[in-house]
Image 1 (cartoon, rainbow, N blue to C red):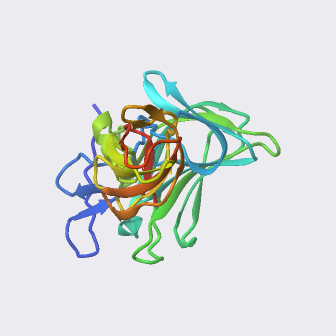
Image 2 (cartoon, rainbow, N blue to C red):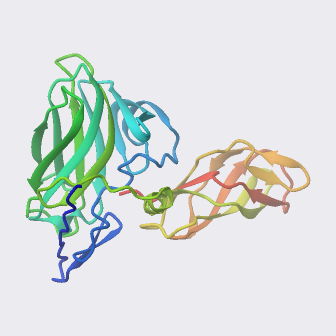
Length: 303
């Protein structure tokens, strides 16, 4: 039987609760141990394959640099496959309100399988101002569960988030590759069993930062422009920016057929719940009603 460690976190006001990475942590329960979102790589709203990623988000909440990325499996569990396109490749998560962990001892753990052509790998973290950097060597030459314990530095702004990175270092000019799963960041010096959350719980945490629009309605205000209502399922971290996630046949011109969305303006009247946007579509008729298909528009409030 594994031992579950309960840790307290004290926020800036001196209480026994705090919100880190969109999760409420209290000293009285053992749930919410994992401060990483989507550490099991279950949620992939943006797609499941990315070629030569350069500081872009791939699996939800995970930013990747200098690597080709794919959704894969580690046994029965979801995982992320990384093949570096440079000597160094990084798997990054930005932890919201990470300043609340200043001076705290934390443990970072994860599973590694299929390591190939690997030199030394590193774990490091830094606040968003670029200071407080610390590096810890992690042995990736063999597969297995890896863990490192370190103390978050007490310097930096009280408004800073921080990044935590797994950095794959190829041997000289060689390129490294590996499969990573079950990533966990928790308070204290003990690496406990990975905390599984349901897909619905994990998706809701991810959607605070990125989500796809739900079905909605709009109308054409010219022969090629449609004003659309953009709305999400959950409250986002901030008023989102928007981008076309799937523009092929996703705007239905009532009585005529589906239209492609070929351009998208910015969000107007926007809030953390969405707003209005003008989209460029295939030829239509001014004043005609439209329906926007679910998942057509990405709403982005990443850190």
